[in-house]
Amino acid sequence: MTGVRTPGRAALPEQTLRTDRWWLSPVVTALGLLAFVGYSTWRAFFGLHTAYAAPYVSPFYSPCLAANCPDMKQGADWALFGSWWQLSPALIVLIFPLGFRLTCYYYRKAYYRAFWSSPPACAVAEPHARYTGETRFPLILQNVHRYFFYFAILVAGVLTWDTVLGFRNPAGDWGHMGLGTLVLLVNIVLIWAYTASCHSCRHIVGGRLRHFSKHPVRYRLWTWVGRLNARHMQLAWASLISVAVADLYVYLLASGAFSDPRFF
Image 1 (tube, rainbow, N blue to C red):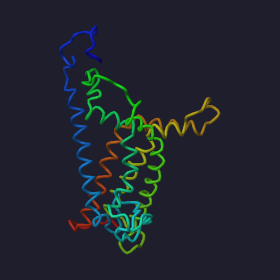
Image 2: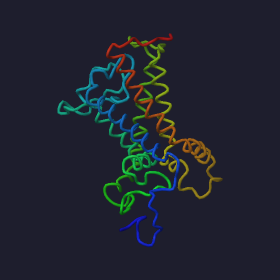
Image 3: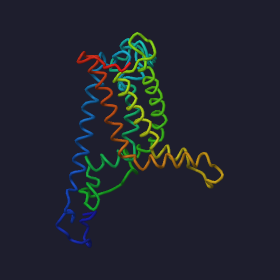
Image 4: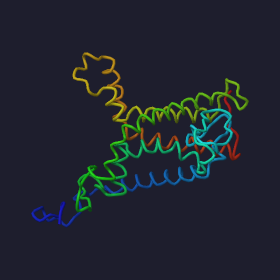
């Protein structure tokens, strides 16, 4: 027997001496992640014909990299994958932001606790007999997080352009602003804030420096990213919710549920 039940350790029958509702956080986390996975899976496989509602593009389908994309008329429609790609075009692009989030330091902590009970919470013994951390396959692949960061930057750049195009009306004229424009604007701000608060971004901005005094610009950027990094958890959830809300809004418009309220 290994772990906390090893002979010689204190023989406590209780799993933990905590008297608060320590189990509530992992349960809520699991439900929240499962809800997003379920929704995004449904939209990725069955949302092709409701991915565009002029002038808005669903963040799940942008940039559109397959020939079976709908005629979005604007936005990043590059069709790098030919007619041989028969699956949803969303699967091509979603692998990058989802890979970035899946390997994110905060999300790793969140789903390790919520789904694997590793550990369930602070000061709560995990049920596993052995612990190897992220030193073995498949968890050693979590180290690709820094590379997913670069792809996440590119996707965020495309979504930024989609947001700019949201200031055009359905006819393509500039000067439009509707509720969808604000939805996309809030979404991209949260996505950039979450991406910039990433530990990889913090290391890129201020890492490998021996003397901050010799690099005042990078030091200033490092302090800004550090402030965002302190809110990494909140930004992770806020951006996850915002991207789902943005996609849902485009879906409702494309399906004819209501018309986009226009401010001007």
